[in-house]
Image (cartoon, rainbow, N blue to C red; front, side):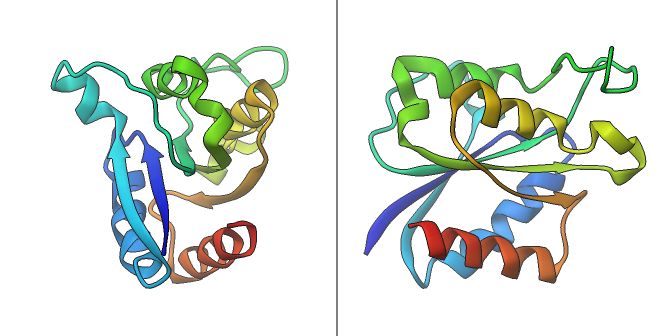
Length: 147
């Protein structure tokens, strides 16, 4: 089986919940592991080169505004962006999945869209808050189709 890592940051627990459920589903197809960047930073561990393929999962936290002419600056999740940048880790990233709240209109999953643009990997999908079973199935199928 191929190795696949799910790299994420979870601040409210929503992304972690999604990852935990997705990890169980994907373990039938991959040697799956997950890496919570918040825990890495909290434990004062150094960033490192990730040598296997991974998918990034990022929630959206922005400085306010409307997402068009302001409110596009990422806050709270920058350690994830720094990890992806570290020693060109982004080159092993198969894509990004964003989470957010649809109440924020144009800012919904804007951070994931920015990662896709900044690093050149695809935006694979989005889900709202903790995601539901349909979201899990859809993301699973997308991952299976690309790797």
